[in-house]
Figure 1 (spheres, rainbow, N blue to C red):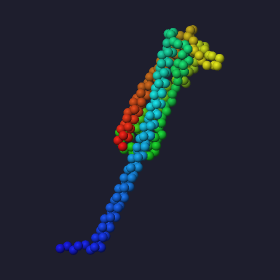
Figure 2: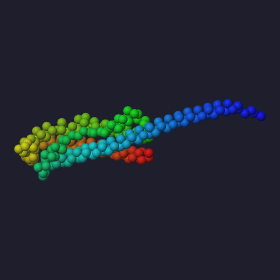
Figure 3: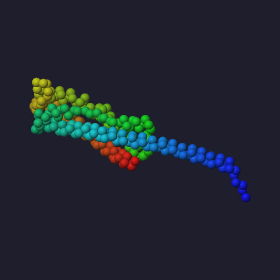
Figure 4: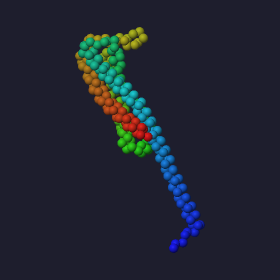
Length: 234
């Protein structure tokens, strides 16, 4: 028959067990608190990225509309130069939007904050990859296309050609505001052909840029849907 443990040893074992359980619980509580804090930070970052995307989409839509207006101006000037009927009083407006350039605005503060804290903060691999691809590739390409790609600098490339050719046909009021552009009667055929070639170039580049804008817009909308699902599941 085994002898029972002395009472002193029983108390010692109970104390050791209590210490072990206390340390384990404290460690588990620390891990839980850390996980909760990371979860809260991740949630806040996702909300900020979503808010930034909402503003990005507004900026994208504004530039898309601007390029569409530029394409409409190309059609008006093409008719103007080929002798078709156009509203001459509206030509100053079309002249303004014909060569208008744009910049690509990005509300990337939340994404930069995410990168500073570590991309691994976003636990969903698919969501993280979509965020990185949009900001580190798609948005950057769009910015370079608008601001650095030489063929997209319409004002710099074509202003002097159009202004020099049409200056004699421009009608100004007493305040020095352009009111209309008269019909190009007497404009040399060689000049007309050069301007038509410029219009063709402007149209091709605006259409190409619009296609990329639509691609980025679609990805941004899809990412917002993914963010909504991720946030609603919390």
